[in-house]
Structure formats: C-alpha cells, structure tokens
Length: 194
Image 1: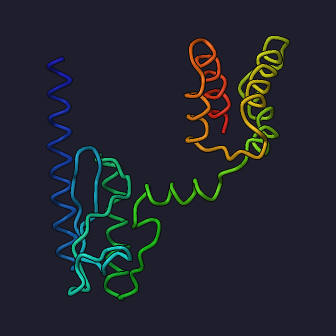
Image 2: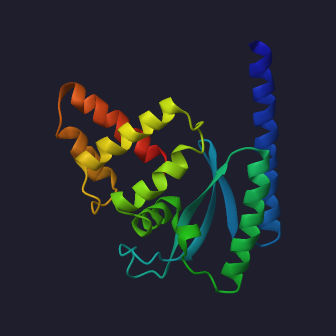
C-alpha cells in the first residue's frame, strides 16, 4: 500500500511539473489561455466575449471564463488540453471566437441532443427487438422475457407517448407493491436499450 501511495505521489509531482511547464510555454508563446486543474479534470481559463445568456455584466464585453471540455487530469489529458489551448488561443487572437456547444459545455449539448432525439414509445418499440437481441442469444427464454417486456410497456403506455424520463417515472409511481417493482424492472430494461 505504501508503494502505491509513493508511486501516486510521484505521478502527481510529475503531473504538476508538466502542468506548470505547459502554462509557462503558453505564456511564453503569448497564448492568452491557461490550463487549470479542478478535481480530476482540466479546464481552460481565458478572457472571452460574454456568453449569449450572461446578462450580469452589461457594461463589460468580456469576462474570464473557465471552460470545461471534460478532459481528465492526467498526462494524456494534459497533451489534449495543450492542443485545445493553442486552438482557443488562435480564435482569441484572430477575434473569431464564437460560443458553440464545445465551449458552452457538455451539459447544454446533452440537453439539446436529448430534446432532438426524444421519440415516442411506438417508435422505440420498433427498435427495441433489434437492440434487445444484440446482447442476448435468441432462445425461448429470452423471447418470452422480451414478449413480457413489450406487453408491460404496451399496457402502460400509449404508442404516441413521448419516451421521456418524466413519463417513465410517472408510470412507475402510479403503481404500488409488486406491480411497481415489475413495471420498474421492465421499463428499466426498455430504457437501457436506447
């Protein structure tokens, strides 16, 4: 255990040294971006034009932001972050920086994608069989289980219902006891195949 801790401490020292070195190189090359470690991920710090939804600084046209690109805080992640720093630095220097999904953050992008891909239960049931048998052998028991899942889904949801987490939760919460457990299990399997 002591050996593992010592190795981890050595790795952290090397990582911190490389991070300091990377920031020094960015500064020396006059790239107006720095790399910052926050927890187990790396962030880019730069002064950028205001975000489209940032209304607290009406007087200023720029503000310092920490951009999270979901890059892990390790040596490989540091290489990636250096490349991203230079790319962002070019955009800033050329005054061509525009807020897009990459810089606004993953959470916003995921929400947009989720809104775009919300389908109805009927549409998902058509794809369900194909997805279900990708990870299972098509045997009598798996076919019976699949038929049970489809039956429960059809019984609890009209085909035109949107397949959203909220709709699934309301169907589960409308039942009690063993029926609630069975519906929860069936809906969970259905939801996991998409």
